Each structure stands twice: as C-alpha cells, then as structure tokens.
Length: 197
Image (cartoon, rainbow, N blue to C red; front, side, top):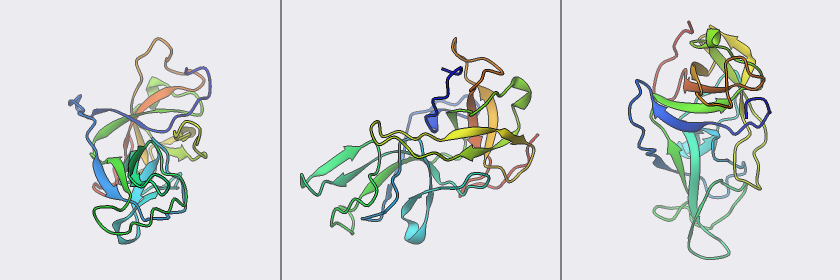
C-alpha cells in the first residue's frame, strides 16, 4: 500500500500510551442542510452554535476530532439512516433534538490515527509535526482522501499533526514512497499546542 498513493484520511487505531481503544465516539449534531460533505476519516470541528463542521485547514486546524459517520432521518425513507458520510446539503426537515442529524466523532484528545503521507516519511521524522493535505473525499466509498503532507515535516508548533510512529505492516516501511504513519493531533479544541521535537 505505501508504494501507491491511496490516501484514506485518518483512521483511529489506538490511544497514546498503547491504551486500549474501544472505538468509542461522541454524537454531535450537524446543522440540517449543512452544505459541505463530510467523509469518514475527515477532520471535524465545532462551528457556529456547536454544530459539527468539516475542518478544511491544512497547516492549521482547530479539530474537535475525526468523523466516523452519521445518522439522519432520510428525507425519502422517513426513518433514521446510518451512513458513512454526510452528503452535502442534505435537508431532512428536522432541526431540533432528538431528530436532527448527528455525526459520530472520535474525540479523545490523545487518540492515535493512521494516515498515509503524500511522500516518504522515515523514523527520523517521528516526533515532528506536519500539515494536512485536503483532497475531495470519495462519494462512491464515503471515505476521506486526506493525507499527511510529507514536505511540511518540521518542529513548528502550529502544525496540526504530530508523527508518533510508522505503521508496522509488511507493506509499509520507513521511507516508503507513500508512508503510512501514526499521528496524534498537535492541537485540538480540547488541548494546548505543543512544540515539535
């Protein structure tokens, strides 16, 4: 996989300190009719009136967590429909609790996520910070296409992702053309910014 560019956004894999990850998530409301698609693995933030929004930043983010799907009352079916992504501008007609659209979000500030880089990352880069490459998601698969920006790796404390490891896999190695990395958020809406090492 890491010899081919196939970005897939951010996938929760564990919690820092090798703590068990129950894949828990919070349900956060999405404004009915929200006009931007949000895909599984996209970074999201709390926006106006605490509604969930896609975080479109690259070198800076204000993430609340990572989007893991949603549920909403289907305008055509008339009942709650779980879905892996939020289709842009979906209007359900429900704007109050408990029927408004809800996003599933991995919000633990010390969650570790797998993400593919858009270039080589080596063991020497572990501990550095990096920017995000934002690419339109796949409506066919409902998945994010975001990647780690390998050319941005630095100690700059404002960069949003911290590389904490490389994925251990027979198809991934240090310095591969499109290295699969393990990252945490360097700054979120719940924690303070940290300087890279």
